[in-house]
Length: 213
Image (cartoon, rainbow, N blue to C red; front, top):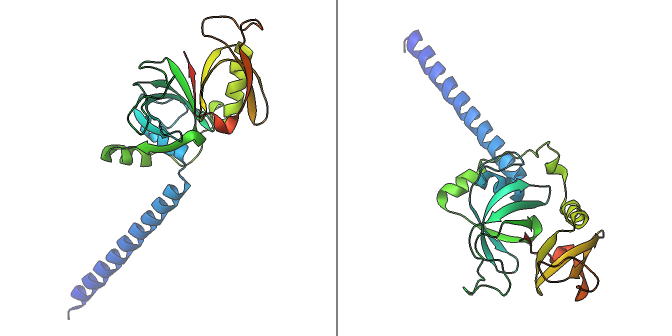
């Protein structure tokens, strides 16, 4: 064998080994990145944005109550997301649960813990996996669900709270460490003692969906 052929052969082997090592390193880095992805990160990828503000993607959620909901995320917090409801939610049996908001409800807040699944198409799987694994550094990224509820209580906003026991509506009076006090009254009337039908303590873990009509 001529020396130049030998060197060409060695150079080819070395280049092949370096390329194989580089591919293996990239594959390992990708496995580590995917291992750090949370459900929140995947949802942010579907929302067409990696920051706290999403870019308008449509996401279909299945809640732990069995309700399927099409939404357009607008904001991602630490353990919740805010969104616009795009269609009438349906239960797994195909019927709309009593009191579930109709098409075009202005805003809702979904605790990530209340999400039982996300319905995806093939292209959406790739979009969700493209989300960064590192948490955001904005203020909204650090705001928890309880903080949002306290803000709604401070603003005296009328809310619809969807729980495993049914739909409850009224004004949040106070927010504890793991629960809220809801003064239940009709929509369109101020929160006055004379208008309150009853008071209800609701565990935060029992809130499936919170709508702002």
